[in-house]
Image (cartoon, rainbow, N blue to C red; front, side):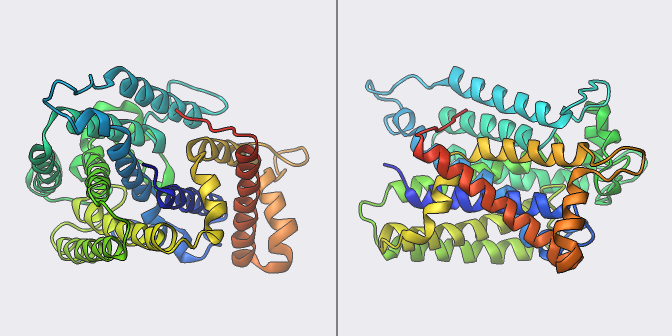
Length: 375
């Protein structure tokens, strides 16, 4: 069974990721919803990455079905541990490749990142799914979320005390600075001594994001018929997550960079609502024409993400003209072709939208050629 609605959801997510990545380069001349929350909080941009992890979990429920459905029976197949480890290693290596592009100074290279977090979350979530029965999976997921909350809020950090959720004083930053020496070198959003925003310790919450997606996929698989009842149930689950996440936010604030438990539940709620919308329109009602651009992007999501990041890095690392004051290519294009007549904020938005359109065309070309690059 293959859910076209899941491919569309994945395509919408990768399009949104390209959009916000491209637009954010022009910060602060960007519409606020296209930027991450400065610290606590959750903007539309903060939904993109957890959507990707949620989708990975849903897809796992289908790809691992033949290893989990007959668990404990003679017909059960041996789990593909080597394939899972290989895929995780490739994703992690690709993340290092993107982080270092193109100077590769391994004394300062950023170890963690988006693909690295996907790699580790996928690896550990897969092992939990393959090694534990359903009840055990739920217990582990709850343990990850509650345990992460308790340790972050009540385990004292040397020099800062317990419950410190500042950029420098939180437990995740402290652990990252110990485990990954380069974590203190990260300068995004002026973090200086803070741990990496996709650090090791906060990956605990990200694993839970994947597992919630897995439970959603398993629940959809159990439905014998494709009906609006499934869509409505997803909506109810999603709304429940929004309420629970909002309440938990009062005790453990939503924070993407710390990947807090309230953030996991809240973003999973929005993921459930978007999946419900795609499922109802595509699977139930057969309204598909609007979704084709996103479907073709979803079929090559990882390759489009990597290529789009490489393009951004090339635009930022190359210059138009010579001399110390020569603008980098992105800024030259942005200022001369967009901001000069659209204004700074609208210019950044249109530039980003045109970039998304470009990658949709690339995805269509790959689709027509039957080029589907899998990791």
